Image 1 (cartoon, rainbow, N blue to C red):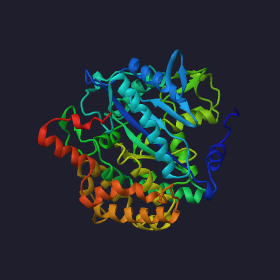
Image 2 (cartoon, helix red, strand yellow):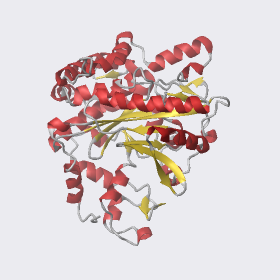
Image 3 (cartoon, rainbow, N blue to C red):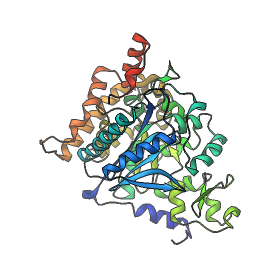
Image 4 (cartoon, one colour):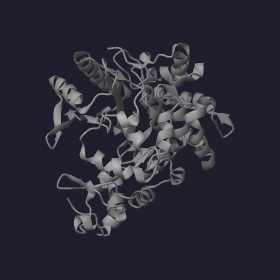
Amino acid sequence: MDEISSKQDLINYFEKGCKKENRLSIGVEHEKFIFNNLTKQRVNFETVSKIFNFLEQFGWKPIKEKNYVIGLSREGQNITLEPGNQIELSGSKLNSVHSNCSESYKYLYELRKACKKLNLKMMSVSFDPFTKLENVPPTPKQRYEIMTKEMLNDGKLSLHMMYQTCGTQINLDYISEKDFIKKFKLSTFLVPISIAIFANSPIVENSLSGYLSYRSKVWQHTSRAGLPKIFLEDMNFEKYIDFAINMPLLFVIKNSKHLSPERKKFKDFMDGKLSILKNIKPNILDFKNHLATIFTEIRLKKYIEIRSLDTCEWDCHCGGPAFYVGLLYGNLNEAFDIINKWKASDVLNAYVDAPKKGLNTILNNKTLLEWGKIFLNLSKKGLEKRSLKNDSGKDESIFLRSIESIINNNKTKADITIEKFKNNKDLSFLYEKT
């Protein structure tokens, strides 16, 4: 692979991500905690290996690192492991939310079968409600060994992010740089609303944390994460590249080994100043690896990644993808015109408040509940306009029902969990039924 000779090579990389308007795809990634049903402990890597072995009967192929199976792949999908053995599905790029949901449900059905066979239980919340950080069993992936050391340099809750959180991520395309600028800004300005609507992590170590989305609080105190002020400006490819190449490298990969670059930036790598690699220059694969170590709420690869949602169960899992598809693909201009009048400082203040205050957070003189109603309506119109229907003739707006329930009742998943916990002090209801 050719080495990177200038910043223009990186601009070209993002430009190659532009898709035709009729070829826009949707990718969904989501994570789950798995617990041992007998001990109530998070599963260790040995148990994960048994899960992977069981899943191979459904056509999943093993992905190996050294002698370990650290993931599975099947038809453009990957099952991967997070640092504390959270199991993640990275789905295929598909053309409708119907297809995303079918893909997820098929995977969850298979995972549920594995759990039943091995006497395990799944949980779809975004912060482990039981386990102390020091008791989370690690996974043997090389990159996590380096990350565990390096991430402590900044961000006091970085290890909590790695070992104790789960989230949902939505990957959406852009058709041009101009289209990217609008979609990136809209996604960034919607982060507080996203946090509030999808809040589902109020419990920490068997107690109320005082937050509706403790996951979001953790990510706000994580190295290389958060919502940089520059993201609230009109971001273009070059600006994002400047942001990315001036961020320290987390690791570099040489001969399948992950090496620590000792706080050097990607720009130093481009300038041939990495002595650990004998001053060779990076190629595009190195750049792709670096982009994946930026943990901000919104992220750019050859598509836009929206990462500000708590995870949830089957009944609401498709709500987040539907909400964002309706806005970014179905009703971009109308949604953009609203947020384009907001002040960046107000968005940042709401971002800080949203994990605790949820839908009561104020942004531009309205609560996030009021804004939620406005954007939900725009999303619904956008999905109806897309008019992509399932076999029953229903369009993608059917997947907004869970959000409609949250908005109409002013009650998030987190609020429901808090109510139940206050009533009986028992958290076993958080386990999914197998």
